[in-house]
Length: 198
Image 1 (cartoon, rainbow, N blue to C red):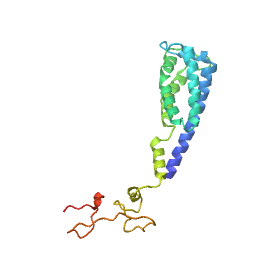
Image 2: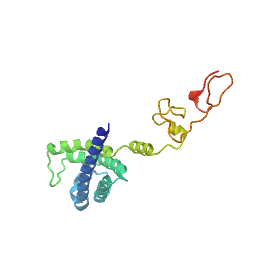
Image 3: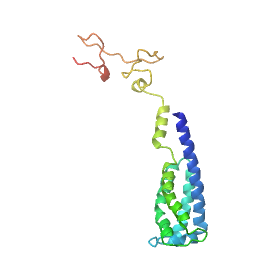
Image 4: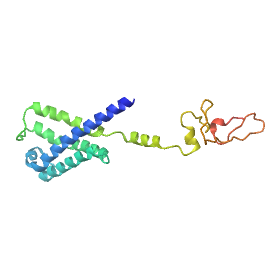
């Protein structure tokens, strides 16, 4: 189990670095060479040159955030959303016969490029560990502060006292159950597992 978790963590780390390098390079191209992307911008997008430059800054910011820890989850989600938003530009580039200098015009390029978009969405969505796993690790590291919490630890019974097979721990005092007339054994009024039907 620990080996599978470590392998998954290494895979996510590799995925984050690959995405960071990809989006950092693409963002720098959007910033310093925006005119090369203008022919494939759909007609419904206003201010296409400004949009290309702004998206370039967003790509660079997302790449930097992926490498960090605090904004890693948000960066992955935003880059996945960005990969969905640029699909219309990729479709126009492929089907409208738009020529972009430096890029091939054949389907040997357009086919893999269109197929890459779902992969980028999945990578952005899966490049961070689950938040619930982090919360679970934090909760597991906290020491129990109540008798009920201590009773849930391995080796203890559900009713707050040590199990018959568990050695008593120093300083642990299980609650004393009162006796009810006519019942030959103690009955606790606090824990449901000790209640009996008379």
